[in-house]
Image (cartoon, rainbow over all chains, first blue to last red; front, side):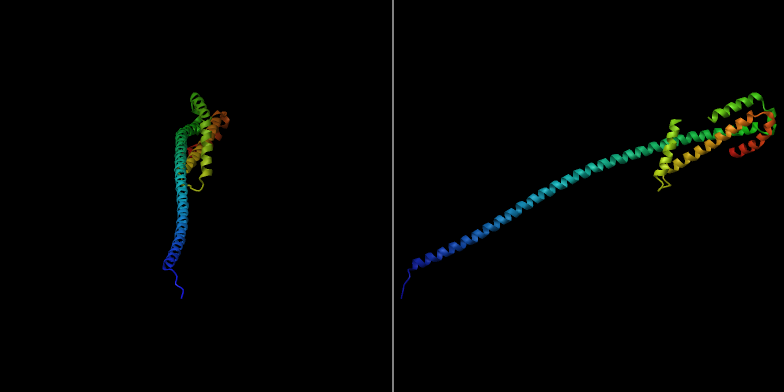
Length: 134
Length: 76
């Protein structure tokens, strides 16, 4: 019967245990490195997205400002056009009233009794008619 | 005169531009302006005819009676 030394057997078992622990540690280290790499990548992505969001916000603010300015300009132009039209309409309506009154006076002068219409008055009216029609 | 002509151009431009919305304030004003302008032109034509008739020799005065009627109708 061969008798192995007890001490050697125990050392052999320890070596095996150490080798197993080393392997486990190595695996853990590998997993940790992988997770760290993923985390770094995730942080980079988040930073990129934050930067993109910031850029988009700035761009939106600038666009809003431009749109607002354009809208105000458009409103100002429209107000000016309305004012111009209103002023001209007032002038035209005033002219219309005057012209109608002149037309009535001309009709009076052209009535059947116009032979006795005073010559001076007739000349003045003709001049006024011509001036108004210019 | 130039400002008036500018307004004519503006009114026509407005009516071309906002044909999709006939109740637009601007479109209504533009139409009103063009109508008033048309009326003014019509009255100016009558004024010229009246002046011509008043300057006509006495033997043509009978022609002016019809014009007098037309003028009264226009001024109504």
